[in-house]
Structure formats: C-alpha cells, structure tokens
Image (cartoon, rainbow, N blue to C red; front, side, top):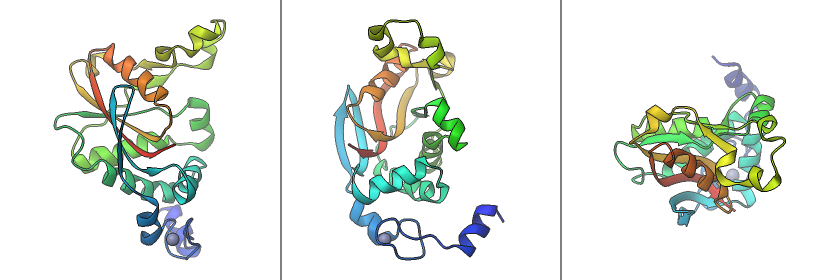
Length: 201
Ligand SMILES: [Zn+2]
C-alpha cells in the first residue's frame, strides 16, 4: 500500500468543486466542469476537456502544487477528451514542465498526463522535448530569447524523425508553447498536427 493510499484512507479527499467527501473531483463536478472542445492553435489541432475556469482551474492548480490524486482524475479527463483523436501509429510527447518548477514539486505533470494518454490509446510515450535552461539563454537579446524555437530542444531527434506526434499539455492559452514545441519537433522531421490538453484559457 502506498503512503498516499494510507493518507487518503485516513483523510478521504474532499471534492474541489462541491466540497463533498469521497473524491478529489466527484463525478457530478467532473461532468459539470468538462465540455470537450476542438480548436486550432498555431497549425495544431487541439482537443481539450474544458475551459480553464472554476473547478477545472482549481483542479489544475492543485495538481501543479503536487496533488497527485487530483492528477489521476485529470488524467482520466484528458484521456476522455482525446479519445478517437490521436492518429494510429503516433507517438505521444508531453510539453515539458519548466525544470525549476518540476524540481520543486518533484514530478512532471504533463509527463504523467502523457503516460495516461499513451496507456489509454496504446501509443508509445517519448519525453522528446526539454526546456532550454534559462542560464543558456542569458546574454541573448530579448527578441532572441522570446523567439519560438529558443525555448525547447529535442532530446531524441533520431527517434522523432519521420513520426507523427501528439502533444499533451495541461493548459493552452495563445498556443505559443504548442507552436514552439511543434516547431522544434518539425525541425527534426516529425509531423505535428495534434495536441490534447486539459483546458483552454
Ligand atoms: Zn463535487
């Protein structure tokens, strides 16, 4: 038994939406808060589970602060949003969490979401993207720092060449991050036309 299981037995989760005891996000609140959506962002077709607001936003923030039990529910939500969407034979690549935040929290949220998608859709998951450390960006001018591809590098160019990639992330806003990730992977020869996210802001 995991320590988190012991913990949840002793202190059953309280729903982030309605406050009822039992689950970190109860079924009723999950249904109320999710409304699957399609959109295009920077040449990538995006499927998302709902709007970044209210209960869904609270759940994502709780997950970012380290609530893995909430992450399990969000993983189910993102899998439901992406059902029948990822093309056969694709690989799933998480949009990386910024390294400093990941260290603080001790785990990488989008990698966990990507693994849930990979398991559910029978697709391999590849942690192909890495954020470029801020140190490496110091000294460059602002325009260069902000330029699309500067923020990520491909950790496995040989493995992504010739593949179709499905990106997975928690929140999409302007799509700038998806665009950067897609550009990095495309530069390595991947096709990037799909992304699955929890919420759009
Ligand atoms: Zn609830």
